Length: 233
Ligand code: ADP
Ligand code: ADP
Image (cartoon, rainbow, N blue to C red; front, side, top):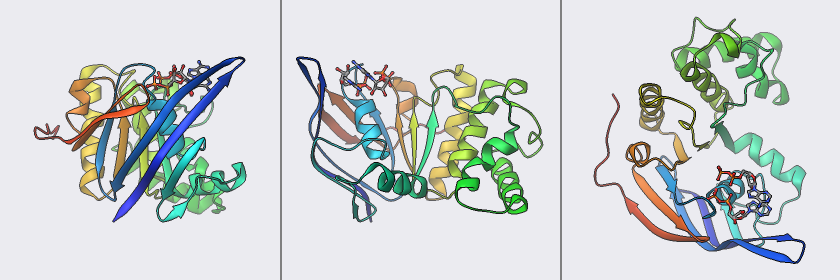
């Protein structure tokens, strides 16, 4: 079933007298369980498209249907609600709270979801175990390696059982061995039925995805199934 559907979405930024057409007309359908890489040169519109897909921003024109719901014209509050329910974010810079333990970082989204403390701890522990960090719950981010930090961030992204995982340059700050481990984890999540969309400018990383979408100048330049999927495991 289709989970993401955009029809001719555009995004215009105004900067004083200047108008920037970050997205001109983007139509794309992504089905539940797909593993997609977005590629393209700097300035091609990848972040803008990810921000819209992730309900951090709305398009200037066109329509965006997420999980059957038209989110194109929602208010910021409505958008935040959809976002918390549907999207798990993974960032290049991990975005963990430095003073909180791994367990507390992972449990954070559950506070907003209204779970009790004991339930939060239980769920966060299970999420840490699912990324191979069951024995690192008490460690703070600076006591972990880059790859471990990213796995904590992935556990946090998964904690509310989102429909989609959006990863913006997830391996951008990692060495190649660690990147490979993160790709192994994504492969595992994909095999369990998760929908994954990642932005990357690294061809070696995009090769793990099953579909590769290339943007250029605010348009989709190509959208192909990956004929040569590499596997990490
Ligand atoms: P990419 O992620 O592919 O590098 P972006 O989506 O960040 O591309 O940017 C696409 C275009 O839109 C670029 O010209 C960029 O400078 C511009 N842009 C992105 N965000 C903003 C913004 N908030 N305000 C003004 N211009 C923006
Ligand atoms: P990326 O490395 O993902 O392409 P960018 O450096 O293009 O990221 O953009 C980082 C953030 O800054 C994005 O959220 C984008 O929307 C915003 N941004 C990009 N270009 C501009 C711009 N010209 N003016 C204001 N904000 C921008």
